[in-house]
Image (cartoon, rainbow, N blue to C red; front, side, top):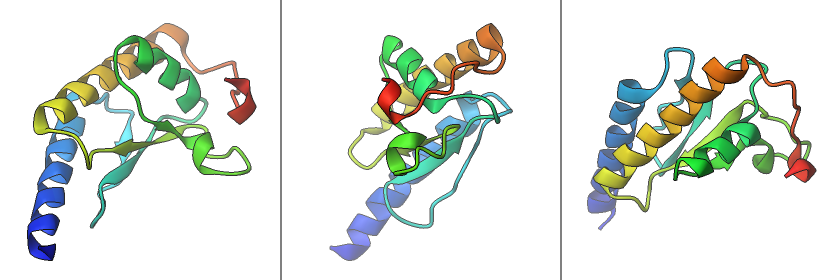
Length: 121
């Protein structure tokens, strides 16, 4: 069972990494996890993952903004992207929508003037 599970999540990870490399703007970076079912995506400095989250919702996608992962509201320009419970199509479509949201955010606003924190939703 463990071998099947490892193969299953590795496949989803690889689908996610391929979609990220296909759709994301060049300014965006991400981790390549050795295991598990999620990874971290990093926006350029000065951009808010919470502001991006609000934009992504409008485009029909979601993720976990960085400040929700830290009691001190850090990681403002990062977000967690989970892929463990998604189909290959859902992963591809979701990342495409998040990438569209990022592209809109980067081109429309320059850097974020709003320093959203956890309580600023």
